Amino acid sequence: MSTTTFKVLSIPTPAPQRGARLGAEAFVAVWNAVAALFSAAPRALSRAQEAAEVREMARHLQATDPGFASDLLAAADRHETSAAK
Image (cartoon, rainbow, N blue to C red):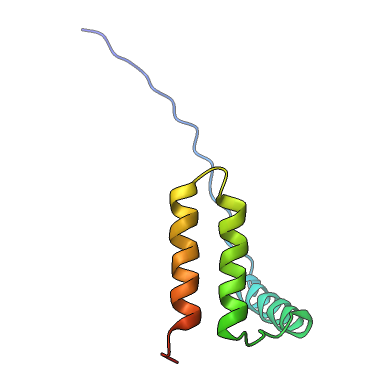
């Protein structure tokens, strides 16, 4: 009969420091507040401006995917001329 010995190195995981979670939450809250101060306010676009942005995207895609670009142009036209608000 034979025996096999298997040694396992066990490294204990360090316990989180007290207050680490609270400190992290406070840091994230301050970070988000400062980011909100410097972020641009969303601007309201008219239907014509929205359609113009989609047409510009279609122009960029025309060389690589002409079918999708034509679909975008048609959608921009429908969006601009639709009466739904």
